[in-house]
Amino acid sequence: MTDRMAKFQIGQVVKHRLYPFRGVIFDVDPEFSNSDEWWESIPENVRPQKDQPFYHLLAENDQSHYVAYVSEQNLLDDAAGGPVDHPQIDEIFLNRDGPAYTVRPELSN
View 1: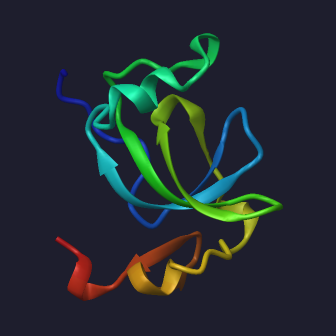
View 2: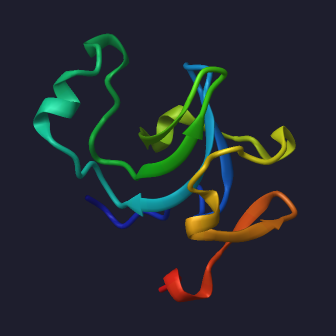
View 3: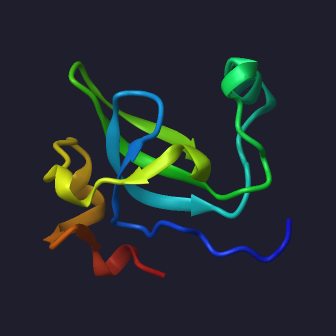
């Protein structure tokens, strides 16, 4: 992979470009770092390139809360969308500071 900066930051609230869910970023991989099985489960017509940042999200939709793994090309900023209501938010973040969440000091690098 070429040196590339991630477009989004840990604590930032984002939404998926194609699917109806949103979440807060809690980790970033500089490029795809999941299993081949996971990769192949994505429909080929919407499968993203592997050579881009992938984000771990505490995600939510109208039915549930879950952890999502999403390519940078499929994320959009969601600063105006309000807080994310995920049960694990307090494990990773202290509070929401403006449009983003603040990582707990004991977890920050």
